[in-house]
Amino acid sequence: MTPEIQGEWPDSDADVPALARMRSYTTWTMVFVVACYVFLVAGGSHSPWILAATLGVGALVCWQCRYWEHGAPRALTAVAVGASYALFCVVVGTHINPIGGVAFALSIGLVVTAPPFSQWPWTLLAVALAVLPALVLGADRGYVAGVVVMMTASVALFRGNRFGFGLFLEVNQARQATAELAVMRERYRFAADLHDIQGQALHVSRLKLRLADKLLDDDPALARIQVREAEQLIADAIAETRRLAYGQRTLTFAGELANSESLIRAAGIVLTLDGTVPPGHRLDELFGLVVREATTNLLRHAHAEHVAIIVGADSVQIVNDGVTEGTRALSGLARLGERFAAAGGTLATSRDGQTFTTSARDTADLPASSQART
Image (tube, rainbow, N blue to C red; front, side):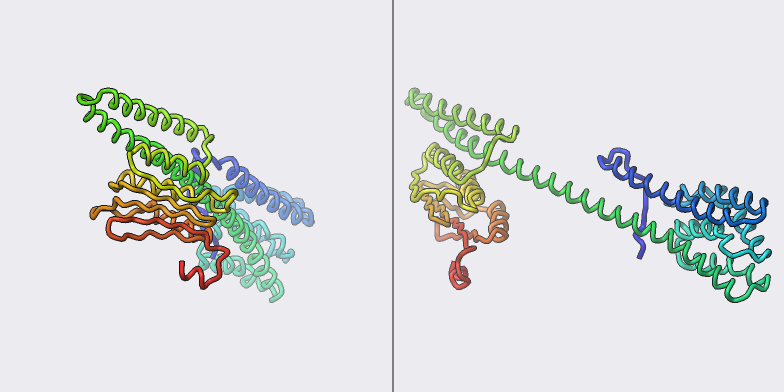
């Protein structure tokens, strides 16, 4: 099926120049091809009247060809089709080679390959209209066959052109969709980073300011310490946000682990850290995201007193004892699980009483039986 070419080019689209160039190239190529056909046919005319008529009608068809995409104006179409058909009848009546009527074949081919006449019944009607003079004037079968071949070639030319241009539009739309998806992914990544940077720092700062408010009367010195620490956390969040905005922030497993350690301890939670970050691990960024997401969740949704982070050569595990009955489904970890699966790893969460465990592991190099056990 021929791809439909609909609508005008959007003026605000960033790809208008490329589309406009392709449209212009296609249009003027078609006009050039049609003009070449007409001149070749006109060059074989033995009568100056036929030559002049062929060139005049050919000019009309070239003009009509400029509107190949959506169809020429009705007045131009009517004049071009009528004049070319009259010339075609003269060609048939004088027993000139049927190729002399190519202007009509091209003109009617433009009509039946553009809306609203692009359905096949209109093409059959056009072929019948071309064959009619040959039959009425008693042309032989070979002549009639030549007319049919000429008409078929004209329709095939314009339908092939429309099909090719339609494929270009489909490829261009797919490229635009890919570009838009990339922008949406980048916006989502930026929003997630911004949420994690500010969410963690602001949540801990809020806890410290609440504590400072309670200590203000009994222990002003300790209250001031809590306020200063909250202020430092906010300043760090501002600096991290600035680095994120200017593309200077890189996410690493070691960096996220150090940031989470600082936030967890600042929130007054006892932290046990076991193991060291493996250098240059292929899932370094994903492990960092797991630590960041788990830290954000336990600071926002849990009431943990103890947190343990165990780092292995190909794994990381975060355990906290503050899970509550009202804990919501953690969509962030679910999305990370999909990314781990795509990268050849696993991400699992489990709950045992008030203990919540998040485990991430690289299983790409493990045998299938070991992966099943993990």
